[in-house]
Image (cartoon, rainbow, N blue to C red):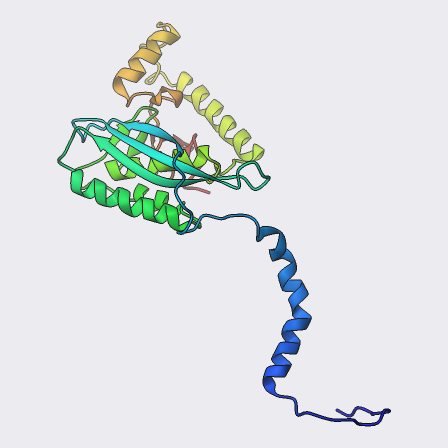
Amino acid sequence: MTIKISKKIKGYSVEKPSDKAAQVTTTLAPVVVAPEAPTALVIQMHEKVERPDTLIGATYKIKSPLFEHALYVTINDIVLNQGTAHELRRPFEIFINSKNMDHFQWIVALTRIMSAVFRKGGDVTFLVEELKAVFDPRGGYFKAGGVYMPSIVAELGAVIEQHLKMIGMIHDPDLSPEQRALIAEKRAAYEQGTKKKPDLSDARETSSPGDVAAATSAREPAGSSAFPPGATLCQKCNTVASILMDGCATCLNCGYSKCG
Ligand SMILES: [Zn+2]
């Protein structure tokens, strides 16, 4: 590369690789710095955020057939950037209380670790998936609504999920209007189909809808009457909402289908 020098040379220096690098940074700098500038004032959750004297929170009760006494799960949140457009509510600490002392050790260990993870900040929602994936080798249980809990730890995960949804850290995966329409359509078709079958409508034809509901709730796990009787457990959303239609299992809760 040649450069024509039209002025008198007054001095010179040899270009070093570091100069070149600096030049690149200065030319790129405005692009990199610009988006950072507005967020610089926003406080994100990190380990050095000091605990205010008062925190807001919520307490959730877990009643499981696996535990003699109820568990009370308290999650306290810190409000960052209060009163600004960047106001954030982030979990800060978790406590679990129970009369049952059998599980005291691991409960204390788990809550301490979870509180530490909360205070580190960042995306703490992974805790939900980790806990919900834990299963009890002795077997899980059904909660009201027909949701299967594979363990008490999984239910802790569900409680944290509920809390993170409340404070806006987790959003429900929105079903598209088309998916909703499809689920409603399948459900209507299924209910229509079961009415026609004589073997399924034996006693129900003569009884009132109230009797059907009563009979259903007695046989199925509590609350599952929101979905048609005969629905089975969906592997994806752990809800008793999967029905068999045209030889294909379809979930009326999340839309999951084995046949795509
Ligand atoms: Zn499902």
